[in-house]
Each structure stands twice: as structure tokens, then as C-alpha cells.
Length: 352
Image 1 (spheres, helix red, strand yellow):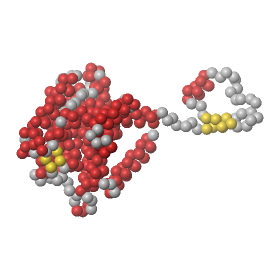
Image 2: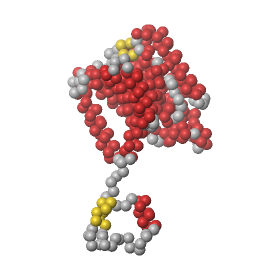
Image 3: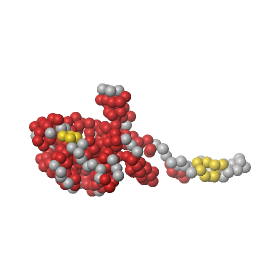
């Protein structure tokens, strides 16, 4: 199974590396958007899926990262400086909000985070000099350098996917160690986590900060891909759709975040072409179908399906009497235990 996953991962990397060279600009944009939203959804999965806290403010961090990126590109900031400020700014805001918010429990935490997009949208509309107001802001971000020989959409595709891959790797390494085990215990039972010595408050702040960092980075990547941002990016609906995408893809899974992002980006785009004006209807139907047949998300369903295909038992030659050797399947471990524990006959071999 592990070898199969490595082969699939290498094949995916090769396909994604070669695809933009022959794909249309629209397809390159779609894949870049999937990567950008996947980073934001992965951050939301850290606080919701791993820490067990309901956060409704991810859209605010996503939009904040995008607006910092737009302002930086419009004013000629170095790319690295704009990226660092987008990530660091959203992380700082997330930490400042998390310090008082994590001391609450249950729905109170979600209510506090709910205020973020509610405040952010009218604030973005009023700050016209910075955000462009309700009309939004268009920028030219990361044109392809001449030495690359690539078109602008191809260059942005590679930049977005490489940065998204690095972000996924960092989050994966963070969650596979002591922090990940502590967050999983915190999600299961906060009282037990405290008794086991898990610093609950510190881990909650860390999870919310990481979620905000990923949200800001996702907004930066989305701005690079789309070249436009508006107050709609900060809206509460985006957070709800991200939560839906995380559940559809599968919580507590990097691949699940990618699948959820693809579901969020691709399904409305396809339905707009098939049934214009009914994208949300088809989106809702697809969501219900996924949740009914895959309660743990698409990734969890795929894991369950693959687990239902046991490896074939090797065939061995069982000696018989006059009939000669006969090919049979090797008995399963449970069957072996039954044969060892009780033999109905002293000689298990068949006689003619």
C-alpha cells in the first residue's frame, strides 16, 4: 500500500509539472485556485478537524492575506516582502484574537470568530484608498520573467503550486508529531487532555494561529492566480463553503483538503456550463450525495474502499492420495488457529 501511494504521488507530481505546458490558461487558473483554496481549507482543518474548535472566521484571514498582497503588488513591494507580511500579518491577527477566544468553550468560540467576517466586509468597503471599496482592486501580480520562457498563467501556476506544496509539507510535519497527538486528544476530550499534561490553551492558540497563517497564505495565492480581490472574499459564505469543502474532502487529511478544494472550485464551474444559473442547486445535490455515501468524506470513502480489497492468498500444493497434488489457497490466520486448536481426525490429510 505504501509503495502504491508513493507511485501515485510521483505520478501526480509529474502530471502537474507537465500539464501547464499544454493546458489552456483557464485550466491553469482552475488548478491554481484549487491549490490556493486547499491551503486555506487545510488551515481550517487544523483548528476544526484536529483541535475540534468551530471557527467561522477563515474568510476574514483569507481576504486579509489577499488585500495585503494586492496592496503590496500595487505599490511595488518585493514579492518576498509582500508574502511575509501577508502570512505574518494574518498570523499576528489570529494570535491576538485567539488569546481571549480560546478561553471560551462550545459555541462561544465560534461566535467570536463569527464576528470577524461580519466586521471585515463593511471595513473593506469603507477603506477605499487601500481596498478599492466595493468595486474591488485589480493588480498585475507576478508576470513571467523573460528567462523562464513561460506565459504569465504558466508562471503563476508553478509559483502557486510550489508554495502550496511547501505549506502542506510544513503543516503535515507539525501535525505528525507531539503537537498533532495533543490536538487529537484535545478534540476527543479536553478534560482528559488536561489530565494527560497537554497545554490546552497553548495548543488552541497554536492551532488558531496556524489556521490564520494558512488562510492568509491562501488569500495571497488566490490574488496571484486571479489578479483581483473584492470584499466578497471576506464574506461569511466563503467560510461556510470552506467548511463544507473540508467535510466533503475528509477532515484530518491533507489529500482531503485538496479534494474539498477541487470540489469547491470545479463543481460550480462545470455546472455553470451544463446548467447555467443552477450551479448552487447542483452543488447542493452533489454535497448531499457525497455526505450520504461517504460520511467521512471522499478521502475516507476511498480509504474504506481500498481496505475492502484484501491481498490474494498464495496458492500452495496440498498432497492428496491417489488423486495426486491439488492446488488450494493458503488458509487464513483465523482458519489456521482453528486447525491447530482442534483436529477432528488425527491425520488431516485426505485419503482416497
